Image (cartoon, rainbow, N blue to C red; front, side, top):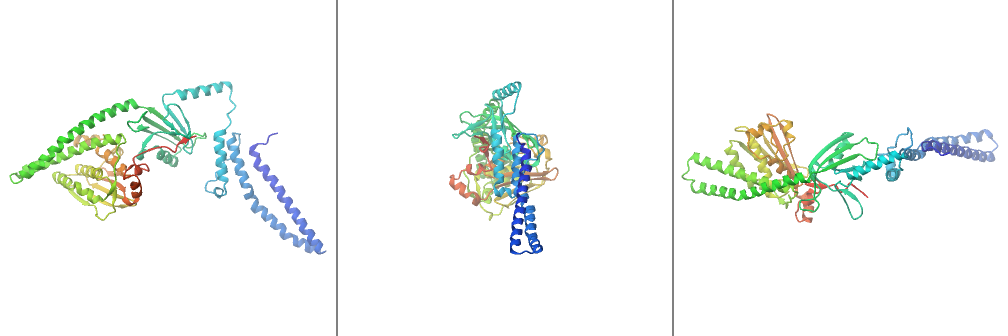
Length: 506
């Protein structure tokens, strides 16, 4: 008769106890005989035999549980993966001494082999036919289906799924998530805070624009941390290439128009400077103020055009930058005259404290100056008449963090959550303030393309604080030198966009 796996541990323990007791009796008898031979004093012999007997019992009590623990653990693990009915609890030896002894590795092998070699259940012919139909349906679905186990390894993908197979036969997910909202981070956070969670992503491409077989997807993810099966996470990929291609064509047209407009606006801005200089002595105060307003408007229009062009580049994952050692204070000085003019024209107080002795940063000067200009311009715009806008900078770990604070209207939480979304403008601000809704979106793109981050704190009626942080040059110098100053080496490890190469199956 076959022995139940669940009974193996206690049966083995009984055999070990018998052997231990036999050993105690044998050693005690031998010791007693030796004493008897040495002396005919029976009382003394019995007295001398007590210490070894007690020692053997203590050894049994202390050593036996530890000696039997691995057998119990392995027995419960094998019982768990066998599928036999049992009330045994699966072993969990994480964080115990068994991690060092190698027992945990043995358990991992058992679970891995069980996953790959689990015997098929004894199904009826009808059940087998239904299973075959379900598998066929999954394979023929026009929607991609991907299943991952608890280690986030790919265990199933149908034909429509966005995956790729390398030269070693490993199949992996082929999707390019934004670093600030990527799939791997979501799964990690979901496993920490809940047992079941869902999320969706839009406009996720598998390849860069221009590459063969490029597609764009809307993705839905479902995480189930308490799933007893081998599948913990499921991704659904809906091919929306045709839809997004149309919107990209529209953006291409807008970009072309913006590019054509930039030339005339630059000329207008230049002529305003020339006219103001030549007519400076003849202009009346109100005429000087008019020139200043025209120059501010021309500068703002130039900013809108630059934002549109940068959005087109970023959406297509082409925001490649050359990062060089620079000072944030020097970058601000590039835009200082224009920013000061905007502040005075709008009757705002501007206070800037960017110390010149801050560590140098890795920066693309033109792009990062655009971030500063966007954030300060927003603070000026949404401040009250005569309001104070403060710009400060300081070291924060491996980053230099810059903050732009206003004491204006502030924002409710419902508005803050969408601020960095493309074309996002709240109903209240869109009625009272001009803008494209692209400034914060492109500021986020530029900051992340520097390997940094951007954020906001705001309270309605009290104002807002926008902050962005970029790496100190010395912390990324080696990577930049190795890549000819390209930002790709930085954004591939936390900024920009990523591919989930780790999620594969053989």
